[in-house]
Image 1 (spheres, rainbow, N blue to C red):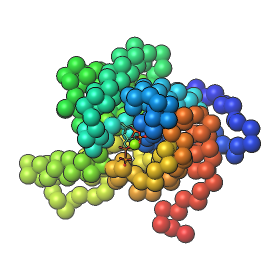
Image 2: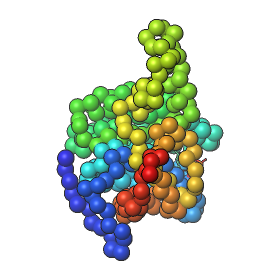
Image 3: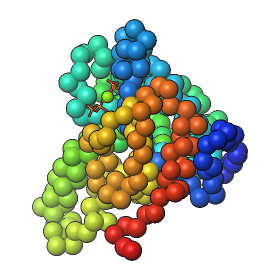
Length: 249
Ligand code: IPE
Ligand code: IPE
Ligand code: MG
């Protein structure tokens, strides 16, 4: 895998790039406040946030991260004004169009976690296409959580398991945590080691509830559009200084 040693900002804790977490997950929050501070419409914040996503995903690929999962739109975000929701869906389309063209070059595998059913048919087809193209690569996997909610994911998994039981394919007593995980959007993806939330909020907001059971959390006041590779290095360094015990000693 390509490995480019990134430049370390001065006076920052050093990241050991040979000991990176396998899976980093980010709640891309703070776009609205970023725009408000500049006297811009919230939609401008989302456009800036989409650029930050591009920068951070490329950096993660360059340092050799295996999995990056980002929260782009939650099951609760439909409560927002139609104009804002439409702008976010529009940005997804723009990003998909560009990334389909560039996938052969970038070799970033793109997956979607969430219910894509309410999206326009054309957009769903583009998501399916990126999934298909992604199967050809074995590089970094980026999971974009769109119309995603942790509770919704768990309910869907429970429903799918119950249907398998009703159809005689499974028996309730054989259900294990591992088997349940196979019914989640994240089937086959290791749990996130590090969950980052910019924008100063101290909550998960329905993000990867099952998968984050033992994730290390890193919160920062930086708003997502201002998030940089240096900021990511700070989070990685903090992660490397933690003592993960998983309930042991
Ligand atoms: C995150 O930024 C993007 C989405 C939730 C879609 P916000 O839009 O939540 O920005 P703030 O939290 O209002 O600043
Ligand atoms: C979480 O941010 C969802 C995404 C970043 C996509 P929100 O802005 O929706 O979360 P709350 O409302 O502050 O909890
Ligand atoms: Mg927010």
